[in-house]
Length: 274
Image 1: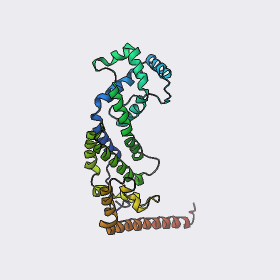
Image 2: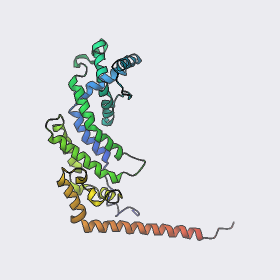
Image 3: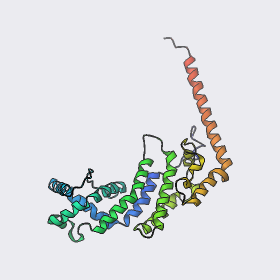
Image 4: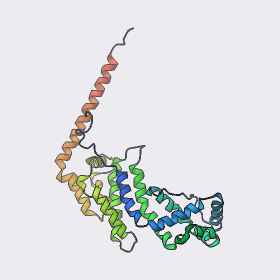
């Protein structure tokens, strides 16, 4: 296929947003009960104009200054679950007033009951934990400008977040992070398996020197992976990488000259008569 780099050698690239979705979905399963409870609390408030108005009364009485509105998530879309939890936890006190003052609220949950303090703590911690993943998804899904230069840094940040969480046994995310890290490693664990275009995106980013392309530049605690990346770029494949980059340059330079010649020839042709 003429015009594709290196005869489609790098044409196959896994969808980063889809892989990230698989990683996060595994983590959500562990907190299904707490998330489901808060989802039902939000669903109750949004079930009728009456309860929405009553909820606003309790928000005003408690002096809650959050201007964001409650949103009900789509249970199969974790990013909408993040947005729901991120807002709902700020209204915990108002939901508590509903539980005390409105019997219909408690009846709505049946035997499961309204969200507990533990559920709210889980939601708050999980929303904080998911923030990086949500922001990364926005980078991966950008359609207004190129983002390949930022993808490797985002993957690095996620790796470090999962690694830190898995090692911090005092948090509720230790075991969850281990499972998510296993899923991460399945797709992105090997530096050599990542599409080289991600490397080139970093190399050609004028805002970063080559030293800053390593994970260590932002995450000094993960030297092993950083050194692997630098070794891959600078030593192990330095000749191959240089030849490959020069090949791309020559190819596109030839295409550019060809296009310019065609345009010049077209402009020099005499106008047709008749």
